[in-house]
Amino acid sequence: MFKFKKALVFCPKFFSYDVEIKKAIESQGYDVELHDERPSTNIFIRALIRLGYNSILNKKIESYYLKILNKLIEPVDFLIIISPECITPEMLRKFREKCSYIVVYMWDSFKNKPQALNLIPFSDAFYTFDSDDAELYNIKFKPLFYSNAYKIDELSARPQYDISFIGTVHSLRYEQVKKICSGFSCYVFFYCPSYMVFLFKKYITREIKRVSLEDVSFSSLSKNDVVSVVANSRCILDISHPLQQGLTMRTIETLGAKRKLITTNKNILHYDFYNEDNILVIDESVTTKQIESFLQKNYKALTAELYNKYSVSYWVKDFLRDN
Image (cartoon, rainbow, N blue to C red; front, side, top):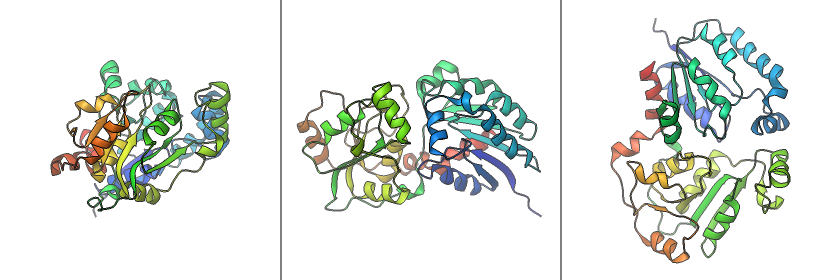
């Protein structure tokens, strides 16, 4: 009888990206076991992890991973860990006893998650979405992906929004989004993972000191809601984190949806899908007139090969080929 290969995946639960990755690996003939990379969905625990206080949770984290490890009856052909915040080198060594091949992928910068650097020597392949991190630490560069849900039909004659923004509130994002959206028909949604994180960043680090509580949601939009907003938008706005160089998931989803993009990330100029008719790179000096002129341009379709290259199906194949 045909026997499926076994894959074990640890990935943060975020906008169903973990499920999309699982489905894509299954489509390649793997039996996939999926777990959250964090030991709990409790808001308080997630906040501690996000703020870097893992040491307080050491026993809980160790217990969480050991429970999963001890339940593994058959050997695992492929272990993939996405954007690790909790798993330690010591725990990775334990999983090595039952896992033939270990891959780690960062969809955040090491400047935001420096502890992940310690996992590089204990993995068979280590990828990052950040080209600067890839060069600095001699690891593999690999941009993010878009799921099949973002294969959206052509733009309707009368889109509901000129510009839409959906993202986590951080740094100067709030001020930048408000400035850019002024004078246009816009959809704006700011998300924060917990009330505790919001208070910490507003009153302790002062990172979001100008952001009001009523401007932030502590519940993320569903994937269907996000796709609906994108489908009804002429253009997507991306304000990248100042500490990262890699392209955001929203950027790649915009590519898959065949929508125009306004972004603050200048690194996009070096990607193979960059087209000045489709993508406007901005800084603090951008004017309303520049945005209006950009929005009036027609979207220029790219090759099928480029769209396919950034799909989630293609994305997981790199990992499996290495294995």
